[in-house]
Length: 399
Image 1 (cartoon, helix red, strand yellow):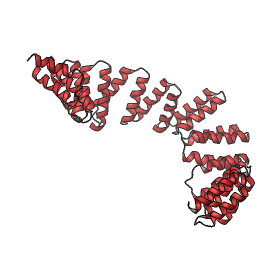
Image 2 (cartoon, one colour; image 1 turned 60 degrees about the vertical axis):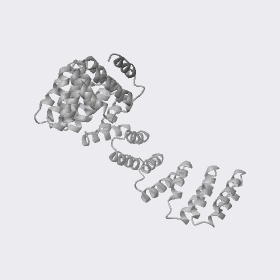
Image 3 (cartoon, one colour; image 1 turned 60 degrees about the horizontal axis):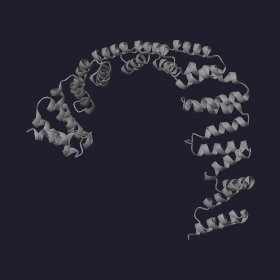
């Protein structure tokens, strides 16, 4: 057994029978025989903390801070223990040292702010939470934390004033709009909140990000018709913004304006200023829409265009092959299914079923020898391929 294990085991045994001072001595003896004495000495402080001996634990931690001033390991637990024992001024100072040693510890300002609230140092607490909001403006919890400062100070109106100022500065922040509305709702003034947000949207009526943030809030609060009006405005202001157009299409569908959505998608597909790269997903979307609307001939034309642009896309090939079969163009479907049968995108059992499908189409066209070959291909890919064995037997008997 190594020296460390021997002293640690001894200390834990003594702690277990309540002899804490003797356990502390065991840890000290271990510390005297190691290159990292702080590791042992920290366990003394931890032992006192576990046993509810908070004064002794803090004395131990503070002694370690004096003895090892450049080592931050005692600080975190010490700061938490200061909080636990109501020593908030010391807790704040400990957190401050931790933050200076590692500014990347973004959780520390939140802890400091909580301490400041208990100390009723309202301005400092607000400043910390406002900095956190500035660093992560879409974090809803930071707004809730700031609201708590104003509430506990007894100045809830101050929080709403803060939000209004922020709304003027940052009209594109989505969470800011949501928390502003929620504040009005809490005050049973929801319509007043919407009026403020509408006015803000009008004021920044040419700012795409501001309008998007407002539209998204409308959608989240089930105001689909109003959101659609905002997206119409966004597209009118940004005629070459393809993502904005596709979002408008989605909102038209959301409002059951399917025909208008289809026409808009068709117009995008026909526009000369839309690049081939941009048209590729638009055509796939439009082709799928045609299938849903039972406009299969239109869908075939579009999928044929898409396939020319992406000849190796197995999803497009499969969709086009299935459409050909639906339109009884079996001879056109077979070559596409053969491509799928050889595709490594599918596992052998799926490829076997594709071979069976090819065999069925060939039989339908009266090409029985070729059909027999496909059924045998299916069995080579998957000996248990459904319907393949029966088909082979049937066709061989009729030779």
